[in-house]
Structure formats: structure tokens, C-alpha cells
Amino acid sequence: MKNKAVILGSNYYIGLSAIRCLGTKGIHTVAIDYSNKDRYGAKSRYCSEKPIAPHYKKDKEGFIKFLKEYAKREALPPVLIPCHDSYVEVVDEYLDELKELYLIPQTEAGLYTRLMNKETLHKLAMEKGVAVPETVGINEENFYEKIETMVGYPCIVKPTDSSAFVAKFRTKIFRVNNKEELEGALEKAQDANLEVIVQRIIPGFDDHMYTFDAYLNQDSKVTHWMTAQKYRQYPINFGASVYTGQKYVPELYDIGAKFLEDVGYKGFAEIEFKKDAETGQFYLIEINVRLTNFNHLIYKVGLNIPYITYMEMIGEPLEPEAIIHDTNRVFWYAYEDILAIKDYIKTGQLSFTKVIKSLFRPKAYAIWSLDDPKPAFEFFKMTTRNVLKKVVGRVRLL
Image (tube, rainbow, N blue to C red; front, side, top):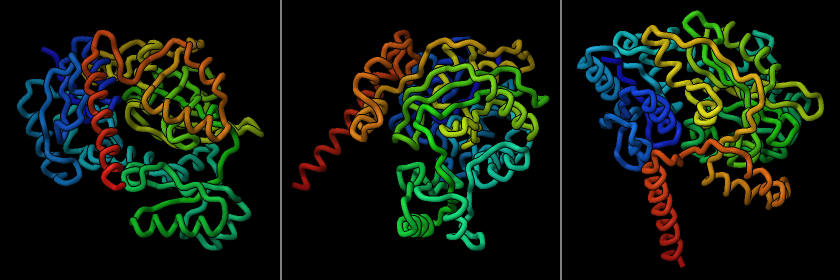
């Protein structure tokens, strides 16, 4: 008998990737969600159970009670893998209670949250000597003077809590070009009761975005890692990966491994960097403390992060490994990349010819899998239904 793996969030392709990474290794996977609606990841042939729990925000105590009661029924403690920031926040809040019943890499309650919060992450990075973009808090003295002298225009208004901000505004940041636009953006955030910071835009196109993806063991030492380079994001310029390639950049290991080890991190993390197009310096932008969007790319080039996590948690850690050569493989989320390409070409940031050439590299698909096609079919039905609803809504308005 083996420990089960409980995956939180199968209504997105990160959860789907975790299910496949573990299921192909013969691990019993349990996809826990708050609704059956649009949970295409749970349609995977590798998903063993699909229980429905109370909503993690609307009924937080009920959700935690559900998790506890599920684990108590098991002969062996399950390995818990949250696949969305909102789930991570809840797990972090109840970490001490959940660790009595589940196997979870992180042992320090609150660390996940401090690294997810852009303001506390900024301060921590500065303490550890890691470069971050010039940032001004909205409550600082001489606020607008600092914006003019330290940050400059255009700049970005960035949330401290990304998931709440995206849920409200459907965008990761506000880009502002002058004081008037800045005041408007701050007013929007204040009205929504969301904390924000103002940050300098590091010069460079989207292909100046890089990541350090690493697993740290229970001694807070990096055992598995790789680096990647983003090529396209959606929304463009300040969005999530839709076309990203594995790229060996040893300098990112030097910066990222030291930082994560210094803060005592355990488990998987992804540090996002931007390389200054003018100076070549890498700036820490944010940290994902759960599986990344392009987890399937990491798997395809040789690192099965969910399985690495699982094996260490059950006391059978795998041998350390790093991807220290270029594989030429890319992650591709075709649905949003098509939307991104349209905007890149419309704004003159990419040519049609360059885009077409990029599509011939070997790929790791976000959703499609030849041996597990059902999630892709479910995703297609879901997106088609959503598009038809929008079309019908527009027609009714005419």
C-alpha cells in the first residue's frame, strides 16, 4: 500500500499536470475541488478519486474539516499538493494542523505567505542582497516625489496579493504613464480594499523574463533544478507563461539557490527574474510557491517535480539532478498563446514570420496529451461554451 497524493485544484492545467506526473508513476491521485464545473483536469485517466469539498474561501473551516476527515480515513498520511495560490494561502494558514495528517514539504507556517506577498518578498530579498526593482509603498512619506525620482513613468501598480487582484480586475498589474493615471489606479485598488505597491519597469521585452525552478529538501538544500526563458506571456508584457523554453542560465542558480536556502525554504519554488536590457542585471520579480504553469515542460526535460516531492515526503528521496544543457523544448499553452500573438503583432512587438518560426520547436503541451486526451476534449467543450455565451450576450445587446 502506498500513500495517496491529494491535489488541490484540477480546474486548471497545473493540477492536470500534477495528476499526470504522479499517475504515470502508479500513484493514487485524489483531485479535490469545490465544484464539478469545468474541472477538466479531473477527467484525466490518471485521476483516481474526485471528491467535492466546501469552497476554500466561502467556507474555509468546512474546507479544512473536509481535508482532515479525508486524511483520518486513510491508512497512510496523503501527500498534499496545492496547485493554486488560493489553496496555498489556506494550507499555509492551517499548516500546523494539516501537517498532523498530511505530508507537506514546508514546515514553517507563514513562509509561503511572506514569499507570495510582493511587499514582504521585496523586503526579504533586499535583506538577502538580491536585486529587486525600485519600489515605493503607498504609505511612504513623499510618495509622489519618490515615484518621480526613484521609479519614473511609465511604472506599474502591483498587488501584494496577486490572486485577489486578478480575481477582481482580470489583470496582474496596472500600467500607468503619468501621475493622473497613477492616482486613478490607486483609487481603484483602494475601492477594492486591495493593497498595492508601485514599481519601476525593468527595461526589456518579454523574452528578458527568466525563471529558476527548484526543489529543496527537508534540509533546505536545492536538490533538483532547471532554468527557463519566457518568450510570450498573456496578457502580453505582464502576464503568465504561454510560450516558455528551457534555457540553461547558471547565473540564476547562483542567485536563486542561495536565496531559497537562506530563507529556509522547503519543497518546490519558482523564482521569476527579469534581465535588464540595458545593464544585464537580473532582478527578482516574484516567487511561485506551488507548481508552475509550465510544470509539464519541467517534466518533459527530465524533472518530475510532483513525484520528486512525493518520494521525499514518503521517505524515499530521489537522487539530485539538474538540467544543465539546452534541450530546445518549449511549453505551449496554445489557447492563450493565440490571443497573445494577436496582441504582440497588433502592437508591433513581434512579426508574424518570427512567431511562425518559433512554433516548430519540440513542445510540452499545457493540456493536450495523446495518451490522455479526455481533459483536452473537456477543455475544448468548456471554452466553446464560454465563447458561445459571450456571442449570444452580445447579440442580445444589439
